[in-house]
Length: 347
Image (cartoon, rainbow, N blue to C red; front, top):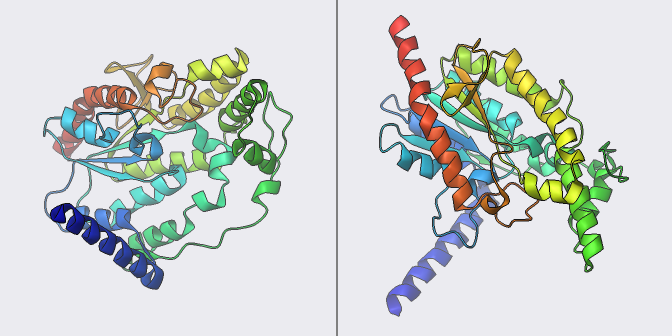
């Protein structure tokens, strides 16, 4: 098969050239390049920007539909709005905030931002991990919106030490440092009792460490809401689903008790910023917000068959789970885009 061999050789050569360029010039930050290309040309731009982490990117081996959640949403909207996906594994509010800041200086802006709130991102396992602070990428974003020029190459920042010695206070576990939890996370116990204990400890590590009102990522979330309102960009947040069936099986009813506490802290922060909570296209409770910031809570919405595996500890969704998120978001997008139309008529 000469044609297939030539295509493979070409792909291999392209990969080598990319790695060589990365080694010499630094890694290419495609997300910033996409923002500049789509919003700083002065002509038509995507109406919707979909930020995301691995929960919208990862595809199960068994999936026939290989699309990301953002691609599914674009199809569900049937061409009524163009969707630009800006996603990367382990992204969180700390970098989303700086991504939104770029729209302060671009010639055009999206009308709507879709932003997942991953409850695990508030855990020490996620937001304290040095390699997931994205300092180099944030530096490029800050440089751009500070009008110091567009630079899209970067070198990985030096990883700080001392991460594993950080103390962690989590209920339902005797482990007390990140290092202890990380050793457990990377382990593969051979016997069933040890495997079940590992699952219980990791569910606590990922989701049950207490979240305070002053958590750094909650601070960034509040700042992002204020920034989006100033820019007249509507925001739809949504709480990403977690495998509550597997969590309850491993931890017991206490899981929901502690998880609900953390969830309420995040919801309260959004409510203080005037966020409207939406379910099935309608507001939950008193609608005191202005609908320029809305949130949908899918944290407990999905059964275990919507994840990669019924016993999954992480939040990666199979095609059934991704389609659910896409349909639910697509049902409220027209209402939210209507908010931007109303605001434009008032101007």
